[in-house]
Length: 441
Ligand SMILES: *[C@@H]1O[C@H](CO)[C@@H](O)[C@H](O)[C@H]1NC(C)=O
Ligand SMILES: *[C@@H]1O[C@H](CO)[C@@H](O)[C@H](O)[C@H]1NC(C)=O
Ligand SMILES: *[C@@H]1O[C@H](CO)[C@@H](O)[C@H](O)[C@H]1NC(C)=O
Image (cartoon, rainbow, N blue to C red; front, side):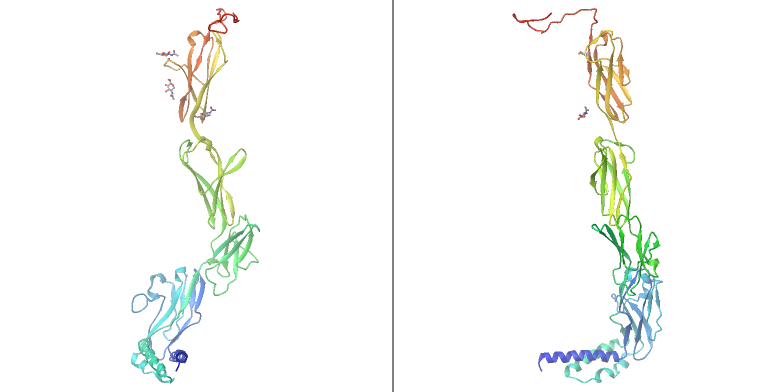
């Protein structure tokens, strides 16, 4: 006999054993072998079993064998506590109902039962060894099968079981830039066994006339949507909507130059925000400054002063936050003194010194000093000296102060000329007078 022939004989044989085993009276039948259901719903695994004779002593459903001799009975599993209803009649019905399904319940469920039959009784069952005659090979294998059966004649596990997949409804959002439209699709991780009708809700209201899992809306739609299947509004998907954006500044008090300031953009959005963009207003236009949920100024400068806002985006659309006015405070800088009138100051006339300084908030206190004079001469942004005399000659400077600091100007020199009564002669050009050159008196 060629090897090939032997193989085919064996094939036929295995097939016939399967039939013989089936006829043997031991079986578990599941109406549906694969079920996909919604999270939160109730499923019934319909099942029946048979055995040759005797009484059933134990029945159990399990998903994992575990390490023990016997599999773990779901009825004892705390995860399933209060959610299992087993209608088994210990004769032939093994239906199992599981309520309030969770995604973790996805598994292959198998039914197992034990009878009070002894191995001896089952071993004597005629159907196995003698009903079909065949080759020597056949005979040996039948014996092996019989040995197995000696073990299993009181225990039977219904393989391959029922594969249960528990899924939740999700909304997938797809944005088409060329159509400027958004397609929302109600999706599940497995195809729902009962082939349901889909229902859409817009702002909580049922959308009439839409029964497919796909629904097209325009982009920048401010409405919120969720889907459900007919008869199960309670098992609906999460709601999808475009972002609702807000912005905050930290620290919340005044912003002082040189300090660290963080602007944070937060958004309530589903699907989650894809991008955050920061903008600031300058010269009447809006300029993009940064991306990301935070805008950090490690050492903020007065030049960072301005109005800022952020824009967050998801597939449903974009939303702009309110505007934050960033007013960077700083102490006085560039303090300087100007003299009016400029030029020569004659005894008896008046002169006004003006102190100016760049500060935010503006300078609220000015103090005037004269060099080599310890006490201040005056206060106020302007210092007027009327009817000036030669003793007023000297170097003057001012101090500018706001709540963040003070700064002195450099000094200006005030020189007082004698009045018109006293005549003076000036020579021009000054210096050595060379013979032959011209000069004026
Ligand atoms: C003020 O001072 C800064 C340096 O502290 C200088 O860069 C700036 O040009 C000054 N501004 C004016 C108007 O003088
Ligand atoms: C201030 O006093 C110092 C010495 O006390 C002197 O050298 C200086 O010239 C004086 N300055 C003015 C502007 O009077
Ligand atoms: C400005 O000058 C006055 C008088 O010399 C002094 O008391 C004050 O501390 C100075 N201010 C600063 C900020 O240096």
